[in-house]
Every structure is written in structure tokens, then in C-alpha cells.
Amino acid sequence: MENSKHPVNSGRIAWPKWAVVLACVGGLALWLGAGSVAKTWADPSTPHQPPAEGEKPAEGAASEGQAPATVDPHAKAFAESKYPSAAVCSGCHAQIYDEWASSNHGYASISPMFQKFEQCITVLSQGTVGYFCMRCHNSVGTTLGEDRALPLWKRVPVSREGVTCITCHRVSTMYNKVSGERLIDAGDITQPVRGNSSGAGVDEVVANAEKYGINPTPDASAPGMQIHGKAIKFDQLSQSEFCVSCHQVAVYPGIKLEVVWDQYRASPAFEQGITCQACHMGKVPGVAAGYAKGPVAVIGGKVVNPNREHHNHAFYGPGYPIAHPGIFPHNPRNDTYPIETWLKFDYRAGWGKEDFEEKVASGAVKVSFPKEWEDPNDRDTARQVIEENLKKLEYKRSLRLKVMENGSHIDGPFFDYPPAVGKQLNFHYIVKNVNPGHNMPSGSLGAQPEIWLNVALVGPDGKNIWESGYVDREGDMCDLHSEEVGKGTIPHDDQLVNLQTKFLTTNVKGTDREMFLPINLDVDQLPFIRPSDKPITVLNHPPFIRMEGRSIPPLGQRKAGYFVPKEAMKQAGTYRMSFRMRSRAEPIYFMKFVGSTDEMIQSMNEWMIDMHPYTVEFEVK
Image (cartoon, rainbow, N blue to C red):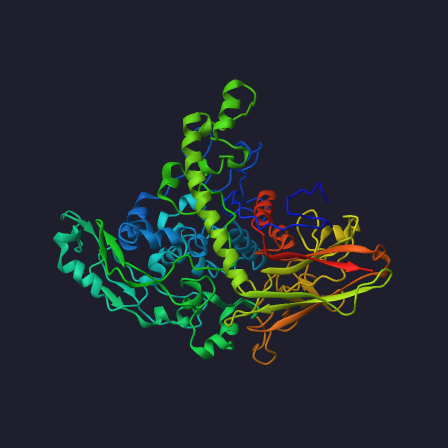
């Protein structure tokens, strides 16, 4: 499929040599507002177009000739006084801020995929799910009572930070499995924070306020930088139970979308006392190998507690961002331009790069720039910010690859009998989950994270003769969810090994059927998410909805068997068999179901990673 619409290494091709691509990408428009499911996004690669005659502007959009919509200054002032931003914390905790800035926690509220999904669920439930999803993804916005449909640029800045510093460090009550309902204690920056230590370091700094040049009092006019005046030890912050609130979630019908805690609770890691923090905040991504050492804080160039355990706030995991890199990762320089202006900056086209701008200046390239980006100096400044952020995202990609490869292992291929010309070739791989904490894959939405195997065989003449795990033009695996398979333009992959869990629903048409969401869409003309009418403990799942788990449990393994038809084994000589395990956060068919844009799909595919790629050669006689 050389003419793939979205570049995803698609089609039935072979790879004699493999390389894991770590080039960073991002890019795409963010949520514009409530709108309809299919029309809530702006495409930053095209100039802004005014609404068609008779069409209302998107909520939050500026009318022609007016300044962009801004945050209510009163709401902003209140939020900043009661709910400090991570940017404020960065004054003393620069390393932690830098780690968090590109993390999935920092991305939670900005994520365009989350916004699309949340909007879709709201429509399907006729609005009855309320603020359910936002509790975890936008904890401060929930606390402030912001309308769930507000566009990003109408939210107060700290609300856009998703799971920000105070989401965890201003919680003083122990919570367990309550689907994200945790109370953030209000207070300005000088109020106490919760941590996993006694707070002796803070006490020492406060006792020597003049030496450190700090001000621990609520009086902002006093000399020195304001900091929190006390740190209180909060035991649950170091326990896996602290993560439960947002990483074990059951939704309206009673089906579980987040299952990480269930898996962990039944795992060897739980039995051994290994916490979530040990693997996701330690010094080795995905491995309980202890913590790095480092200072608690650096204040005015002075180091506080230099040899404390350092908990990495990158929160290693399989997720990744597909937002415009002028908006994410978090970077104070992002504020150089408003969000709406960033969305019109086509970073993919090379705006602001030296060679591009030279071509524009010489007339070799003609571009109709949006008004906001007509000045080449602005494009140059924006490009500097973009490149800075892309470097951070490239590092995030490397951490993602490490955590995924550290949790898995591949052996093979193993041949059932010696390969021979004119005979069917039977072989298999052993896929191992070496992670002791949870299944592979695990994570959000139960049926969304994808891990599948891609194996290809090249004959002695250098031509691809067989493959499984190939994808269609959109990037979907070629199973029953592929549009091309449905149209008959690409063959169904009968030997596909896919570890993705599926939702199974009972529909009017036939029996159980794989669906995008745990909703019996065929039952009603107007789909509606209804709560279960009986206790789900009776069936262990809602009536007519269940999940078909295909993931590999902790320290478990799976045999992936394949065969190459005898008709393909025509030549004697040296054959090459290539393997890779592929990972993607969202299926493309699901993205299209919730109304994602082409650029969202492109970015999702560009962030796909190949784990354990290798090629073996063998002789066929």
C-alpha cells in the first residue's frame, strides 16, 4: 500500500532491516467546544475560515474583527489564589516540572482524543454521564465547577494542566475505589502540601527564610519568593492505593474501562509489595530497580536535601500525545501565543524553518498565511518553541519504548519441522509478559490499547511471499474492523495475533459482536447508555455486555503460531523472516467512530512504536 493515506508502514511489505524510529511528532488541532461529535475540531494546517452563511460560530470562537475569547479574569484570579499552577511549583522543583511537563498526567486535560471520546460518550448518554470523565482528566476544572464543554482557551490555565501538582499533593484524605472523586484542598502557594516524607527539608528552609530568599507567609508584599510553609507526610501517596481512584473505573452500564488495579491486585508484584510508583516513577522505566538520588528542591541556586530518593514525574507508560506541539508539552514559552493562534501554525509545513522562510522570501513558495502568522519574526519565534517541545517529545518517545520493551520478551521463530521446498512452513513465537504488575497490554478504556505481532517472510529472490499483522491504508489491522477488509480491497488477516481486549455486546443482528464501546448500538435507533437494571455482581458483567480478554497476564506467555502455505515455498535458498511487536494507544476505527480528524489519525499512527524488531535467516532445501 505505497499510496497510504496516513503514513504507517502499511500494506503487505517486508523489512530486511529494522530501525526503531524515534523521530518526534505531534500535531493536531485541539477541542473547540461542545459542538457535534464530528465537528468539534480545528485543523491548524489550513487557514481559518469564517462560518458559512447561516452557520453559527463554534462556541468560544471570536467573531470577525473581535479579539479571541479569553479566560474570565475573576475566575483566573480566584483559581490562581486557591489552586496554584505547576508553573509556580517549577520555581523550586524545576526537574520535577520538566519531567511532568510531557507526561500523560500533564496531557490528561489537553488530549484531543480524550475530548473527542468524552464528547461522544456525552452524546450517547444524552448528557447523563455529566462530569464523570472530567474528574480524573481535569481535576482542578472539576473542583472549580467549570462547564465540561468549555474550550481550552476559556479554561483557567491551571485547569488545562490536567493531573497537576496539587491533584496529588493537595489531597489530605485517603480514598480508594471511587472513580476519580478526590477533593483538592484549596489554598494559596503558602499552604501546606502533602508528600511522602516528614517535611524536614521544608522546615529547614522556612527556618532560614532569609538565607534562601523565600517568603512562606500569605503576605505577597513581603520580601522573597512565596513557597509552601509546611510539608506533611501523607502515607497513601507512596502506596498503590493512591492510584486507584483514576486507574480503576467502572462506567455507566457497569462495565470496567480502567482495569489496571484489578490486574495489579492479582499480580505477583502486589504479593511482593512492589508498588505502582516503584515501576512508573523509579530510575528504570517499568522495572522496580529503586529510585535515583537527587535534591528535593533547588531554591535560589541552593540545593535542599541533595541525596533524597527522586521520584520521576514522567510517570513512564504506554501513552503518548497527539496535540499540537505549540500547546503540549507544557512550556512557559507556549504562552507567547494564544492557543487559538497556535492551532493555525502549520509546523508540519516547515513554517519558521530557515530553508522554508528563504523560499517564501524569494517567492519560490507562496503561502497564504493566517493573519496571526503573516510576520516572519513570529513564525521564527514559534518555530523555536516548537523545536524545543519536539525535543521533549522525542525523549518521551524513548521512555515509552523502554517501558514497553522492559515489560516484554520475544523468543523465536521455532520451526515445527525443517523448512522444505513445496511443503507448508509451520512455526511459532513465544511472547512473554515479563512485567510482574499487570497485563500486557493494560491501561485505559479496556479495549483501546493495541499490541499486535507483525511477521513477514521474504524469499530468496527478495520478494515478500507472506505476512501477518499488516495494516490497511488507515493503519487499522486487517480484521473485521478494517474498512478495506469490509470493502474487499485488502484480504482479511486470518492469522493475526492481536493482544487487544474487545468489548462483546449482544445485538439484534446475530449473537455476540465486537463493538467499539460497551453499548448495544443495534438495539435502539437512538443509542443510549443505560445503567444496568440488576446488580452486576450476579453475572460479573452487565447483561448483554462483556469483555473478551486477549491480554497476557503478569509473567505469563502466549504461543503465536503461524503457517506459510506450501504454494508460497517454491524456491530453495536463503529466506529472511522479520518480526516486530507493534503498539498504538487507539484503534483507528475507534478514532473515526468518535469523529477524529485526519490529522489526529496521522499523529496517532506516527507515534506507533515497533518493539523487539529483528530478522533471522534460514535455509530451505
